[in-house]
Length: 225
Image (cartoon, rainbow, N blue to C red; front, side, top):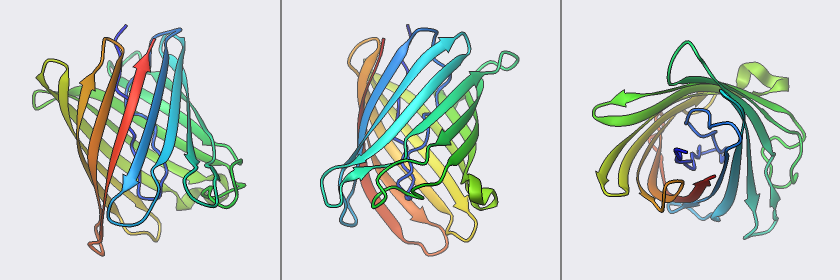
């Protein structure tokens, strides 16, 4: 069973994006625990968890959840569920449909009490000698579908030596009335075995209109069985 790295892909809005990899095998289960810590401003290292279960060939179900436990008020973000479908007519391509449920702690959850939706197209392909993953996505709340956030993402990974790999994630996100954001996230991944590993990256999030830059670090532990 081939393991897939689950990155903690964090937008500046603290929305954790779905992982960019293709559908896992039937009956396989993946878990991911991650955290992001801002360095350029005060903020807590909020933990995030994710899980994937392979349902049938070409289809899995995915879950993600963020927690705020270090400072007051404490609570949880809106839970997120999604289905990811592998396109049989195009190798390496898949589609995702997700929903953010209208639950969570009112004091900390973004858009508490509203339901969010997300649609994404994902593709895995060779890129400059690397194994690359890319996606394009649009997410919005159901009561404001025209005011959502669009995102383009590219993440090539190069093998360095042994179990060590280097990746350079590049992310562009934009929304109605907001400052477009460019994310540059270089990082290292180290495999702990056939189906487990750890990764860490340095995150630069740049507001393209104002030029303001946020810097942070993120790390995750993942396993598949």
